[in-house]
Image (cartoon, rainbow, N blue to C red):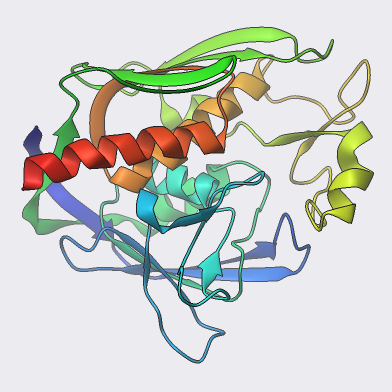
Length: 285
């Protein structure tokens, strides 16, 4: 069911953010712009001849290999990749409506977390809009599973993510963390957690055209027995996984529920988001 809680919000003024694209390694730039009520989060490419709007929603996802990419199924080049950290920052800042102009096929990775986006959004400020915010409240369990990985959302009076990370790697191992938006600061405890990768996989990823912009400035690099660069949190890896969950779940706008995830990645997150969207459409019809 939908509930109304507070007013919708957008940016107070336009923001420009520049950096390197994580996977292509090319320069990337985005402009975050205020948007009217009920717009949601909409991306568009400034480098293409046509201004095709790509709304951030589960049905727009076209690729889930090491990131979340939205795009047009009719026009192949009309896509924007690696949106999950930015989406999490927008969610965490409290924005509902935003237009995002992207200079190319990928958003800048900045430091590999959501924090730089989050900081700049809050610095620019938000403004209330003249429409109530609608939040979808999950009323029955919804889940997605793939072998040993699964993710489910249960009814809950708020928004909570409980994540269990389990890697067969001595540096990561098993860890668990729980984020409840009413009890923990997103900005301090989740937004700052960076993406991570393994030194042993770098060459293979590069051959696939992935992580070409990856560096110690935008990712935690993991060797056999240690990380190359220092961690921001003892359990930064599981916190970053929660960050990814939040970004992917925001494809449905704001929702209420308790998400429980075990070893899940973007593919399972979006599968759950698709199932939630089915419930949302049933409500709307």
